[in-house]
Length: 212
Image (cartoon, rainbow, N blue to C red; front, side, top):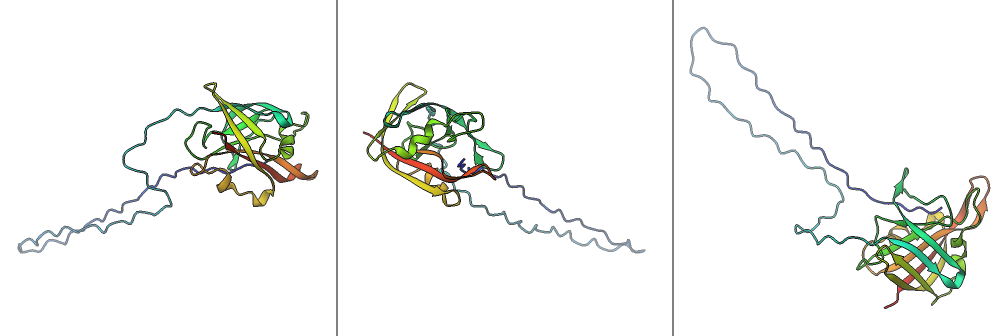
């Protein structure tokens, strides 16, 4: 299955070195005390990381509305959707049952002002029949996909494209974008099946844009 990768902020620890001062041996005859010199610590450089700087004023918090159902009636797709995150290895989690899709909860939701809503499901799995997302490849441009969110609102999208990507060439940053043009991204597997690895060669990606 395609999995997409996700990013996390790493805390930085700065180690400060403390300098110690020794004392001279005492002379037999007293001598004027030498003036005490306080050493100015050398500033320790802060490690640089590629982390975008957020505005000082926090944006208003908006409760996300997770998708709970996706329907593409033209290809007989009607599946429940659950929230998923990132599994060990940095890949997108997916429900084991191909008849259940996963919404990437670290991305945009259907009510977001921008960014892509990413929903994915296995095409099949051991002990399960072929999943509904196997029919994504049959979607035609202009066909309607409906996503119902947790608040009961139905968001309608028009299919723009269906593309097969070799897994190594999947444009992860583009598909999982959390800013820019709003879109619905549906992902499953396709192409040739490798019985040795138990994986398909490609990802099938359907992209749809919101219907006003």
